[in-house]
Image (cartoon, rainbow, N blue to C red; front, side, top):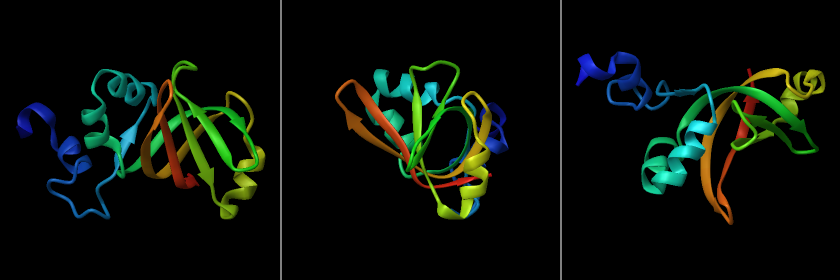
Length: 123
């Protein structure tokens, strides 16, 4: 298994690392949305309640969230930011690159899924 997946994947899913160190990296939130549309159970198993670092592009900043897009507008992450990051949030603009960390949450939505991070920190 190690030869096929590599040590980074094993660390990301927490097989050989303490939970505090186990963190997955998401380079495109669309991949999570795509998997959810094909297999809801698999998406939740891999991503729900997992600590993650997410890379993306800012779609919008509102009073509570930084809304992050992947490579298209089809998948979004609603990142509820902390007041501790307010200065970083004020600098963000539409289409600027952003990196956030926190616990991913997947919930049902009428047309797919709602991907959120309620303890989001801008890195």
